[in-house]
Image (cartoon, rainbow, N blue to C red):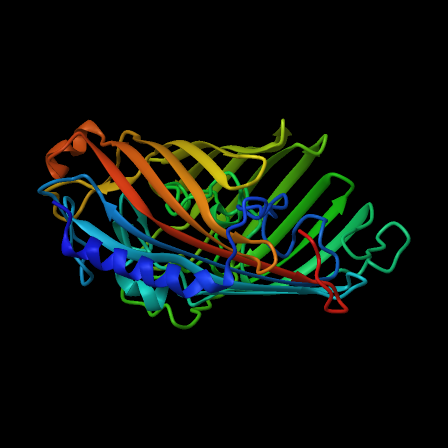
Length: 436
């Protein structure tokens, strides 16, 4: 039986649809799923492609979720307890991003505001198998001031480094600072076109850009299709009681380095590593490493994006080194109205052994996840820069055998259905509209 919360979410979704409908046309020749540029690793060290202009994006998922874990509560100290068999409404992934770069490419800046502290609070979203920031089986909310970065490109005035509207030269040096992403791992899940759904990879705390590091200072050097990048940053992880309404900077005593190589314009290979120090919450210092391959290509008008990624976390003084890996694929039809996605993931998680006093940390055998999702844009306007999609996503979860007694199940099927609002507007330095 569907709970009253789902009915409430449906009312919210209908209200959103009615509110935006006057601004959104549904002509058949109007493309949906606004085209994605090849995603940037972090929005500031970045790749070529937008040297000049202003860029604004909005995004939000209003959805109903059921974990598929009847009779099992999902409880974390001092935050909300979820019933694993009930259906809950969520408004998540709701953010506004502004980006600017002056026409010659010398300076760029990024501001990304995440509204999850307002729409989710500190309780986050129940997500079986997830862990991080002191929460288990819950995806934490992001900071209100999610990213705030500025970068200087001192080679933009040289012959090889000359930048113009929508183009950069063969060489680039980016010196960046602010609150944002360290130089490790593949594109952050929220910035990659291979991961279009509302859920978060379970391994995103292993070797995948710490994307709310505060502060982060670094440099990225590119020669044609080769990038060498490094950064120092504060690696403190928030805890459930910490406010998400303001940044929590820490001493930049952690560091990371990454090498990336573009192959024929369709494949990017990366290897990276980082040293995490002073993570807070009693977490030990650790080493992390990541390796990935990201591909994007077109076939008969369809757009495909795929990522394969592996990472390992090696805590100091521990006899375990949990690993995680994923493979994900998204396909968009020629009109960009339909998008299908799939992800297969395994993740080893640190677990507290049941009944141990003091708690004994062990590493489970891998959790396995398999996700399938589909979204159809039902309202879209190229002129307005807005689109509204209906989506559904199903994830099969295989729970490690040693944890079956804890969860009362050996597997679960999580279901998400809802609305996805997305908007994009781009202007050049003269405030003229740019096509994307």
